[in-house]
Image (cartoon, rainbow, N blue to C red; front, side, top):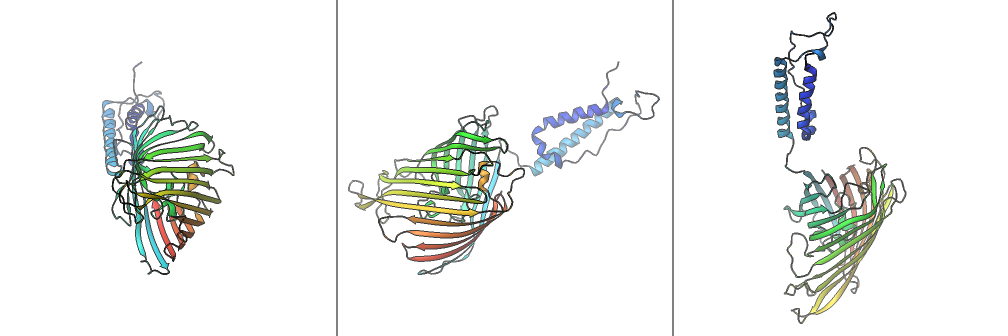
Length: 460
């Protein structure tokens, strides 16, 4: 018998080879129109049954003209595919994920014993983030990844590095039923407390609690250092791809000089955190329950009571923080609560390290948030597929938060407190309208203040 290749089979073979060679370009296939040119039929037709009027196209022999026509179609298709990729798809030599967050805010403030603060619209923050893999380990998941984000705030009006770190998975990470262990090097979040580490997309209030912000211990900012983090004894509910470890831990060494700032002394700060999670399945009433504890132990440049630094850069002043927190992030009710204390050295008298007389300032803080939610969950297939998804609520989320901070417990009437009535309306998983009404009592300045914040935040 003569070996023949039918036109239909030849077409399938060539197109299949084209698609396999362009396996990484599958995302663009739907945008490519079907080829408009088809091979012409030949007059030479071999019929399997001479008595049959109809011709089986699969049995037609492929001629040289057929092959040339099909090759032309493949060239046209390849050219169209290349044009679509060059015009519509960002390309890089390594995997890259681009994201961002934008906060447009309106603020209105009224206060007593103080001129009314300016009211108006601001771009409170703009964050542009890039992340991806520098080394992808397909066998064990020991990946080397990176994260870089740039932030511009209403105070700076210029983009600065926010997150800038490399992370390596020391343990294999492909099996979700095994523990994780990573090392992270660079500028990153400090592993202290609950509120300082919650991202903008998961934070219910428009502003941080006092102790986490610039008016407190400034723990919500980034710092430069190295951190080990991982988990132990993970519990997995395969029906919902829900994974929750019994123990989560973080331990880091940082400069202690704040983000985008070079080290100012000889010491390093050690920060650690451990969290115990309820090891339950997805449908349990205790899903989302966790208890955590944190510590911060470091030294800082000595300062006088007026804030003037004593020269020398020795880092002789104590800076310690200890905290505990509990969270129940669930539907429809949930709450978070934190308590923390601090010790800071300052100089009573003296201008040098040798003659400095020190005293210790003790401070404390606590905050509690209670929320309720209802509406729809913004996930495609199933609700709350992982533990992190518990932070993204349903459509409507009213909440109330009480925040307290005392910078020096030895001084009477020195504390600040803020009561916040809030409502969040979620348009999507990372897009929400935040309405906050803050009632502040600043006893250290004898100021009572009311503040209304309307903030539209969206992420991509």
